[in-house]
Length: 161
View 1 (cartoon, rainbow, N blue to C red):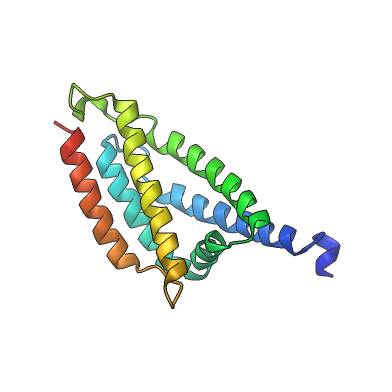
View 2 (view 1 turned 60 degrees about the vertical axis):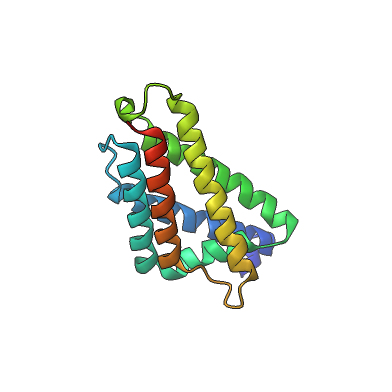
């Protein structure tokens, strides 16, 4: 019956992944304060929401995490496209009205935001790689949040007045 709805296992896998991403983003947007104007406060808020979603939907987020560790190039390419679109859409929506007056006068705000986002993208990729190499194949979220706090503080000190 499964193949009546899906042509193959890949289609089923991608359907489930899309569903999990959509559910996660729906829950995320219910909680995120889009009226918050401070860029780094908003980043912190996002981190806390991620933790809350982890506790509320551990299986869904574990599926997303494991899916992103997938090594099959066929699936990996599709996941990269889905993730890129989701991240770009969320970034535009979440960071469109930030207060740029808090940034130092000598910095290009758009480039600064890119640096911060690339930093966290790289950090997330490192987390996934570490999870892939660990015996448990799991991320230590408490440790990750502590490390994110350190990076956030450093970046804030670099770019804010």
